Length: 281
Image (cartoon, rainbow, N blue to C red; front, side):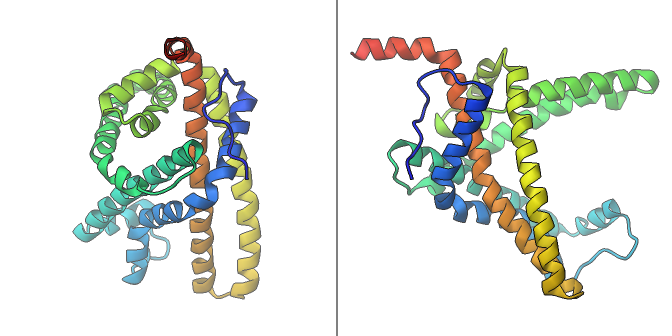
């Protein structure tokens, strides 16, 4: 399999960014499946623990009430936080491995690098969540028509904010930058590209949704045949399929992030790159 040229040497169209994402995915997915699967399993630790304890929601119980009941157990909270940390580490390892494959083609050391960057990743997440929460605060503290107005304003700001910070984690991992630096650079790189990036992310989500729907429909059909009415077997089969889907999809998220960041660097930093090349020539 031929590794796609990365980073691109020119600005890419929306279609070319998506095409580069799929080419990166095809070139790196197999070597990233283990980390991706472990990341998905880490995110399911709470559910696995609940099933192992035999804890199931009572029939007709509200799902939110069942969730609150579940997390009343301190062990569940600790397990959730532990699983979240592992998920962050494994997903970061996937992105780092993809970048190395696109570079010199070698793999190894990505997990250790992800662990080393864990404090910075957590700090970045706290910063982003704090900013988003601050946007929602006026709507929560107001009432009546003013609350509706603030809620609409918060929704608009959140949509813009999601796009604006979408490259921060990738910058932090690939360029080994700090949380604040990564956030600022993401804001600078994405400035003026809101609609373009929105189209890219929307098309990518639609493609994944369609693939998920098709595979889930096939899996449900097979589960009905294999399970033969056995609820436990059907549930287990469904969980296995969900983990497999998550493991297959995770490298695509990384591929999309790498393709978008590379294109934005060419657009925003291309002149600086040309100057550096000329200086070393």
